[in-house]
Each structure stands twice: as structure tokens, then as C-alpha cells.
Length: 450
Image (cartoon, rainbow, N blue to C red):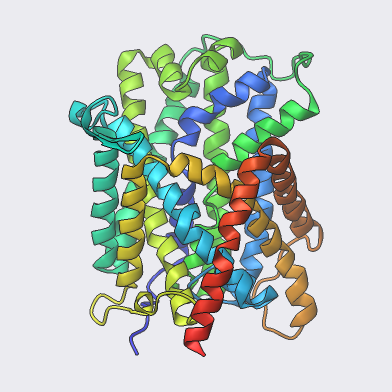
């Protein structure tokens, strides 16, 4: 039987963690936060707090990853803690929407920014429109650009682990360099604004507003767990995975805080709230039109790198499911020459491209926001479950700050779940319905495997 290649080190794990997080959020999301938290000190502070909460998750998942150094990440942890059904439901939702919809959203963002340099790929350039019953299906240049990016990265990851992680690492280093450069030059130039980080809070700043801002921040950190899915391809997963998760999360937190310090020095809060692309707006103020253009280029690299890392890690979920007999058996195949899960890679790429062209991924994704953090809460609780169920299982790494750190992470995830239920009850119910569709699928595959 052909196995995956254990060819990744701690540095690869850290770069995958960074690459999986750094997409468009650092260049866009702060504007949304400024609308609900019109206070420069709080804007910077929520990004630091979000990093601390994400670090609690990384510390928690590091224990699970060191216990089960296999391909599959959360799928494996949920299966081991609660049984195969719960792992399957995560994998089912991931393939159907969570990972595939995320890839489609990243691809659309990549295409939109690429269109600023190559007008053919602009989202305003409609390639064709076809009437379908009462609906018109149209495809624009941005969708095509995003789909081509997915197709290219699918082929790269098909050809080998080193090829896939090599492209991911190079692009991630480039985008780290671009963000560091923007932050350092932004801090060196004279500040148009003198932000009062400790200014009195305006009346509009309430606990509810802080909660809304934290939701945006936590989405900005999403993807920090990507390296867990690659544990089966790490040379020393018990050491490399915890190290990669922790250093990668810390690095992203520093980058986010630095960029937001630049923003509050470049723009008054009112201007931050008025823009839709705060990275470009701030760069234009600090460096002129050329600076704004460079930020657009940085976003292209950033979204491409995030696509690359996501395609690299998410396909390992379906490989593990298929090997357990609860997904399409063909997806269990590891190529004898390339030593990659080639059929899982092709299936994920094809479905993500279909969602990109469908234009419905955003609506579908809102349905599973509830499920995403429900799975995170359950996975975090798995640390407690497994310490009780398997007290003698080897734990090369034990979560620092136990039990406080895992509890903080679980409560953060549950707060997100409850907020989603309150703010989007209909979408949450649809999300539960999509999960429920996995039940007959699970029993069908289990019956075939029996």
C-alpha cells in the first residue's frame, strides 16, 4: 500500500499556518470593525485579543495533533473523541461547503483583485449570461480568474507534496514580506493622524458592538488550524505540529496588530469606517497612488497563497474519510509515484470550481457558519473527553494552561455559535439541515463498508 510522504518540518507547519490565515482580512476587515467600534485603541486591541483567543485554540489543538499524528486533523479528533459519525459530519460539511465554499470565496476575491491589473479578469467583465428558468446564470472574468487559480494549484498539489508545499511556502514568504514592508514603512513615515489609543470610549461602544467586532476579527484569523490536517506528512509531528501552530499563530497576530497600528496612524476612525478597502486607502494616504497599487498586488499574492495552503491541507480530510470507509472509496487512493491523495485533490478542485462559477457559495457559506464553530467547540472539548476516556494514551505535548486555556477556546467558539443562532436563525437551521443530510449518507457508506 502506498503511503503519504512524511516530508514536512516545523517550518513548513508554521508557514502553512500563516498562509492559511493571511488572505484579504488584513486589508479589508478593519473597516468593518471601525463602523461598530469607532475607537483606535479598541480597533488595535480587538485584533490583539483575537490573536490571544486563536492562540488558545492552537494550544488546544496542538495536544490533539500530537496524540493523533495522522492526516485528517479535526476529522480524526472528533472521531476519536465522540465516534465515527461526528468525524464524518465534519468531513461531509467540509467537502460540501465549509472548505469548498471557502475556496470559492477566496477564488472570487483573487479574481476581483487580479482584474485591477488584468481587466479581462474584472468582475465587471461579463463573459456570458444564460437564462435558466427564472434565473440568469452569468459568468464574469473574476470567476474565471479564480477558477483558473484553483485549477493551477490543484495540478501543483497533484504532482507532489514538495511541489504543493513549495509553492505555498514561496507565496507565503512573499506576502509576509509585503505586509512587513508595508507595516514598517507605514510606521516610519510621518503620521497624518495622532491616534489617541486610550481616549474615552464613545457611547456607541457597547458589549454588543464589541461582540460584533470580535466575530469579524475571529473570521480574520480563520484557517489557523490548517496544519493539523497535514500531521500525517510531518517528519516529527509530535514536535513539528505544536511548534508550527504556535509560532504561526503568534506571527499572524503580530502582523495583524502592526498593520492596524499603521491604519490608525494613517486614517481617522471616520475615514476608516467610510472605506471598503482600508489597506489601499491607508497606503494611498501614506505613500500615494503607487502605494495603493502595491497593496492591491499584495492582496493578489495574499489570496493566491491562502488558496494554495487551503487546497494543500483540506484534501487530507477526504482521504482519511475514504480510508475509513465512510466516503467515496476512490478518494482513498494515494498515487504510487507522486505519493499524494490525487483523487481527493481532483474531487475538491472540481467541486470548488463549480461553486466558484455558480456564484452561490456566499449564501451556502452563511448556512454553515453555525456548524463551523460548533465543530470547533466540540473539538476543543475533545481534550477533556480524551483525557477521561484515554488517560494512558501517549501525549507528547500537553496543552499549556490546562484546563483554563481549552475552556477559554471552547467558550469563545460557543459564543460565536450562540451569536450566529441569534443573528441568523434561519441560516443556522438551514445549516443544521445540511448536516442532517449527512446522516443517510453516513449510514449508506457504513453499510457498504460492512
